[in-house]
Length: 98
Image (cartoon, rainbow, N blue to C red):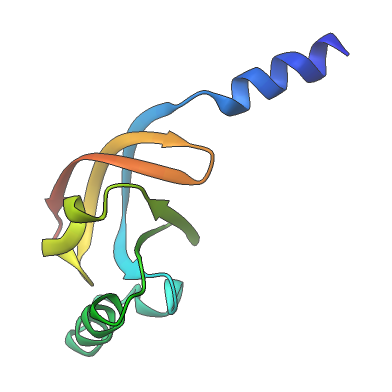
């Protein structure tokens, strides 16, 4: 029981770090990891239509708590620093990748 309690406490903690990926939308997710012009237009349209921005990193779709932090990077390849708690990332900084 102690091992389970330790794991539960550890899993609930925020994890600070850096992630490389593509800012996509919650509807299309990993479909836009190519960061092509077509993908950027789709992501922008989906977000304007009410979908949430997400980060796709290493094949995983990560929710973004503070949407405004990535609003200028929709569809782009980025490096994000922040805090991950569960499956939700609070973004501290976004840097465009080439």
